[in-house]
Length: 504
Image 1: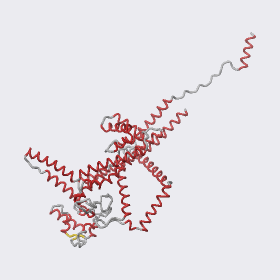
Image 2: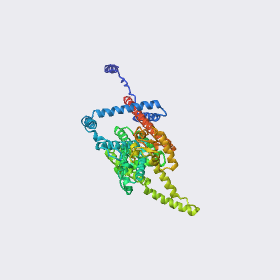
Image 3: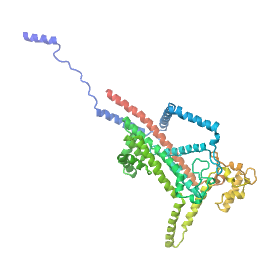
Image 4: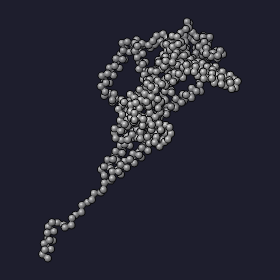
């Protein structure tokens, strides 16, 4: 009894005999669950982002595109204005250039007169800068935009090669023939001299290779965005959704183009610099995947760019130049005629009828050259360079269109006089012909001089096709910039969810 009382007292002195229960913390959410939530959100936002297009959400797309474009301009201006090269090099050179051109030595910038004198040295330097910029920018537009570039090769470069080859054969020589696209005397026969034997494959190739290589270098520059985007995504630790989506789609499809994408990525991973060079050396529609792959693999910038520039700017475009010079030139045409001769002999042996295919094809080519002659642009004074009284009378106008039939020549000459003979003396002077010149370049063509020249249906269709390509290119760029901006906002939401998950 006494012992139990003593034990009870002892317990009371120590405190409660029963230990107090401690609160059990709530179990933390498994990391795998947090990761699933983040990936689900990212996947949901990526799906919603695909609907940001001008056709589906025009207001949102225009708003995001405007924000992205303004931010890019501000970023560019800030980089330019805060660079020491701008203040110590660019601005002094620019000031010296304008002082030299406008005050000190304007004669060094005098433009040429076709067939009379060449342009002054600094005018030629300006032209070289302008010409190089023109072709490089066209090259960039051809390949930029993740496969949605403007087809500037088909629209500008290859028609230019056709014009050079045709002009050389029309003029009968390549000596002195000016082939610069922006030159005021471009493809003007009055600047040429020399024998006919200069119109060879090698000379024609030399005339077109520089514009081709400048354009090819521009296409290499246009391949940088996929590489830079993929590399930036890999370095930041996030996924390159464009690359991941392309790879996923390519693996689920069995068509030739998607198989080529997978082969391109595997070939790039295995062969590095040599692989990029080889993939860039032919018209490879899946080369965007090569750029994305190189960025994802963190390949050094200069390794990727130099290999791409050598492949596209040296090998590929010169191969294309060789093909088109042969295709448009007379040597290839002779080979074509031999083929038609064989075909004509076979048909004659089978049917007993001579179709005269050589004459038919030759006449078609002659008409093509005549059409080029009519569309050849020149300064108005060029029409009077062999005319002593500087007046074009009816019979002299007929001679300008000597590739046409006799009656058609007279009809054209009558229309020309009726349209441009303002003083009624039945002849055209230089001032009257200048009224027919274009306001953009101050030049005329025999076709533009004739007010009754019909508009070709093919020309109208081609112009509509070009307009459609340009519109598609612009819409694609707007959609991509808007989606990229929305991707930044979506990534911020993902980061916010990660922080909330960590707090829990």
